[in-house]
Length: 241
Image (cartoon, rainbow, N blue to C red):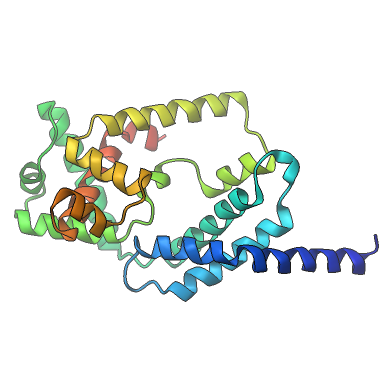
């Protein structure tokens, strides 16, 4: 096959992918938009997602066992998240507050051996409860997919479908981490564990979770944020490696 013919074939595959799976880009974009700050535009997500879709069309290998839709979904989502990370709209002060909250929870739970309550963390940080809840809201607005951010990178996820197998040692380490993370989430206070389950497993948005729990959307955001900081505090031995 000459270069012109090969190029034409690639273009045809990409055009077919856009026609057949453009809906997937829009679906993932709308899903992510529910979890992002108001400053993020739907069109920006769709644009970066289309780049991921075209990349998937160029690199997909059906012999690896995954369907194209599954593989493309990973590429599309990863492309959107990578673009948002490059833009990093979150102020440094919010990043610092996130680190301070996780550190405060870690200190309290090591000292008391029990779950750190809102009031405990606020006191440890030297702020009132209202200000602490505002900090949680600000930090939570900066998260895209916090639980997934604790696990393998998008490139690692791609490698599974592209056949770039990691070493047995690395696979075992990843399995141990995933198990440790699952166990950690199980030890969270009941409401925090439920919010994470509804958000990540059932894919409900904050408003829908609020309806399930009969609390406001802002309260769900606070619970989610504190749950993630508690997870990070308890998983620091893994995350600091």
